[in-house]
Length: 138
Image 1 (tube, rainbow, N blue to C red):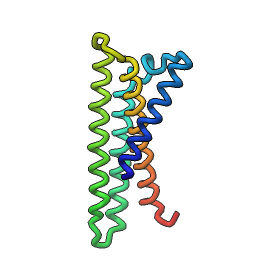
Image 2: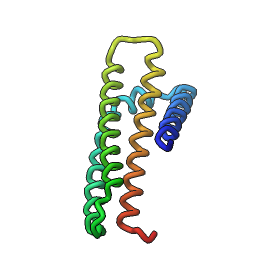
Image 3: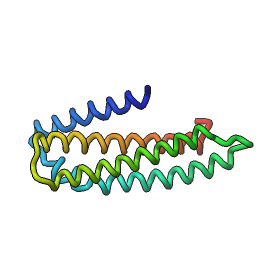
Image 4: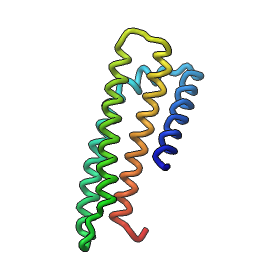
C-alpha cells in the first residue's frame, strides 16, 4: 500500500510542478530537467549504492546470526527501482529529441518530474536507513 501511495504522490507532485512551471512560463523542464535527468538519476544511484555498501557493512557488524532477509529484499528492490528510473530517464531524453507528437511537452514534463521525485525519495529513504543502522538508539 505504501508503494501505491508513494507513486500516487509522485504523480500529484509532478503534475503540480509542471503546472507551476508552465504557469510561470519557466524553461526549467526543457533547459535543465530533461537535459540533465539521466545524469541526476545515475548520480543518485551511485550515491545510493555507496550508502547501501556502508549500511550493509554496519548491519553485518551488528548481526548476531540474523541474515536481515527483509533488509536485503528492500535493498534489491531499491536498486531495481533506480535502474527502472534510469531507463525511464533515457526514454524521456530520447522522446525529447524525436519529432513532435501530441502533448509532447506535457508528457515529457510530468514524466521528468515524476522520475526526479521518485529518485529523490529513494535517496532519502536510503539515507534514513543508513542513519538508523549507524545510530539505532536515535
